[in-house]
Image 1 (spheres, rainbow, N blue to C red):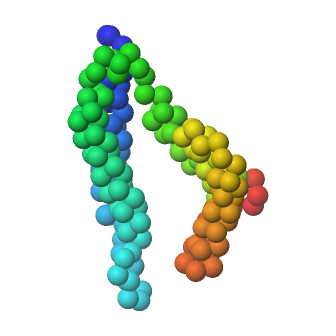
Image 2 (cartoon, one colour; image 1 turned 90 degrees about the vertical axis):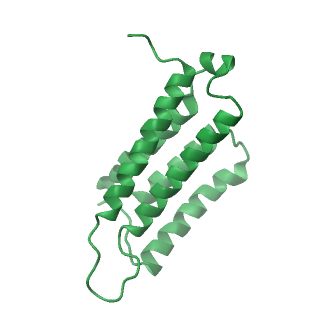
Length: 155
């Protein structure tokens, strides 16, 4: 079997992410709706929103790549799309880190890694990572009363 080249692998990655988002969207719509109180949104709203946004973003990226001929150009055949692979790896590592070290530490680390992968070297953004992460933690814990994972190491 011949190895995948740049555009073929890019199409495979886009397809994988698209199928993942569709599956996650379907799964989120199967969450039970709470029967206590007057709930208009329910527990599946946020996952459905995120997966719908991912579907729209993937579709938009494919359309732009096709318009700019990035998928089938000579340069694309020689290149390997490392950035999506690294980003997916960081997010998978984030899920594991959140389980082990908790939301706050994992989010700060993941935020900084994503900034680095995107090529952002301004130190103000790295300073914003813990502030933003802590702010989200406060919003979820104090306003929404949803306690985020503290991690196995800190229990």
